[in-house]
Amino acid sequence: MSLIRDDGVVLRAQKLGEADRIITLLTRQHGRVRAVARGVRKTKSKFGARLEPFSHVDVQFFSRGSELVSRSLPLCTQVETIAPYGGNIVTDYGRYTAGTAMLETAERFAENEGEPAVQQYLLLVGGLRTLAAGTHQSHLVLDAFLLRSLAVNGYGASFTDCAKCGLEGPNRFFSLQAGGVLCADCRVPGCAVPSPETLVLLGALLSGDWQTADACEPRYWREGSGLVAAYLQWHLERGIRSMRYVEK
Image 1 (cartoon, helix red, strand yellow):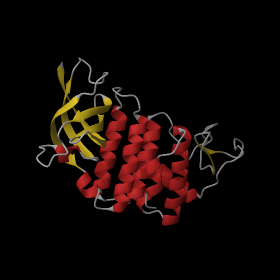
Image 2 (cartoon, rainbow, N blue to C red):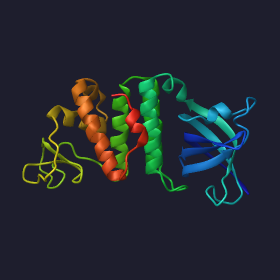
Image 3 (tube, one colour):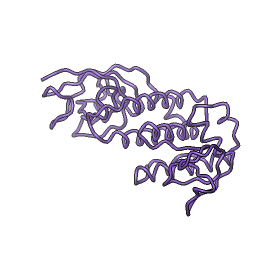
Image 4 (cartoon, one colour):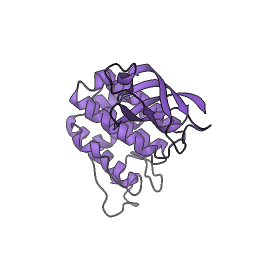
């Protein structure tokens, strides 16, 4: 038996019995972890409200073995709030739907329990912090998070240079299969031809150029979001369910 401490973001909570919950977290050191939080649905629970989705918390786990992820789920025995991002996110529909899509995406990219996913964890914390602050449009924050999540998991897209031959951009033809834009010589059937402004926007979101991203017109936001959603679905091989509710 051992006590293990880590910090993480609550991805979701499921009811268990009459008063317990199974909490899924993306943690810094152990990746995705599922744990049982006993009695958190009772009104007198000391830390039930701290284990809601979007919460960034410091958690102490009680494991029956030397490993946190084993045949039996560990217990959450102590929880301290690091940042309650949910307070600002759940009060706005756009932020809430974007944040829900971010949580689901992070969980999909950390499918193997107990396997560290530090970059994905840091991306999620930074994305929720930005979303809660409300300094940028929620759908732009979501698209930036999705593009960077794809990049850190080996699916980074090119929005300037040709993804196949490396020809310097700008290039116009976008291919999901090829991993970004293609030049005229490398163009394949089925390529999309987005507006140049849309490609500039997506490149800005990937690189963190918020001045350029915030200045884009709504029509380019919408076109860019469609490309990002399609690119994500192509590499995950199935869609993110909560994406259908995201406010565009």
